[in-house]
Amino acid sequence: MDDILNVTDKSGRRIRLTKKQWRHISKEHPEIDKLDYVGETLNSPLKIKNYEYDENIKYYYKHFKERKI
Image 1 (cartoon, rainbow, N blue to C red):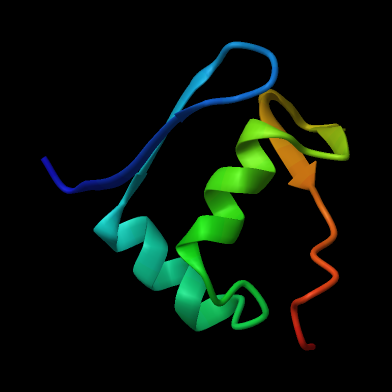
Image 2: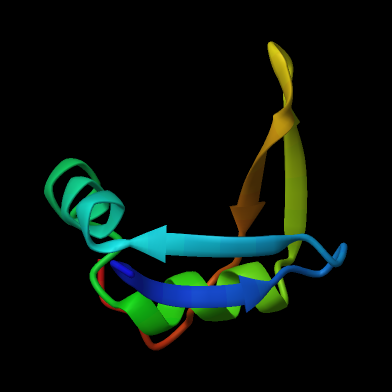
């Protein structure tokens, strides 16, 4: 498989990230520069926000103090 990350989120949903998805994230969202941040955010987010047009899509938020912007 092309999965580079498999986690269970705070609500118990299984989430996987493929190499192709990570390439997109790295290119389009350079502020997300470490895969570890993605996994940690999914495991213990500060906030989860619903996407108003699709109930299956969630936005996960977490702040990393050590991260330089």
